[in-house]
Image 1 (cartoon, rainbow, N blue to C red):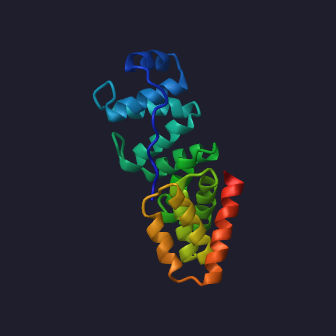
Image 2 (image 1 turned 30 degrees about the horizontal axis):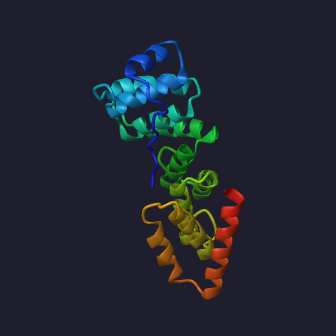
Image 3 (image 1 turned 90 degrees about the vertical axis):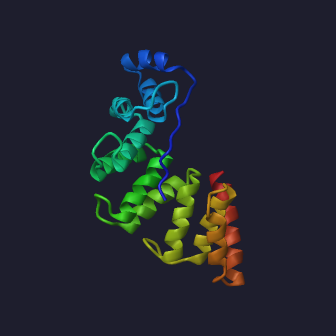
Length: 203
């Protein structure tokens, strides 16, 4: 499951964001792009959103890089281009952007404009999961449940589903309960112990 949404960071008007954006402020460029994309304080305009996301992304803004990648992935006012999506997801992911890390992992999982690589998908899901991104935690649980990119391990799958469930991730409780049905009491105890250790380490 992809995680695309990235909100703007302040409450200024389009007028003030534009003034700052035109002066080269990367955060203002990102926020202006967000407002055009979502029709906040201005008519919705995907072309303007892409323009300002790109301005910010080219200055290294990770949030803008993630959102620009999404625009390419979905083909919003640009030609749908998975290669460009991968490029910008990767730039943001390498800066530690958790949502982009999850999205990049999904591109490797699906093999969209990159060679399908479950191990690479696991790598990026894990980086995102370690930052507390619940979608990546659930996705990592699925990798362990199916044995894709990692050895099949129901205790680890249960652990990641459980951690995602604690963050109220949609569907994680059902997935955790489903995998639990095929586990022994010993495996369940191990999963609970691992979950506690993970929470202590990454809280």
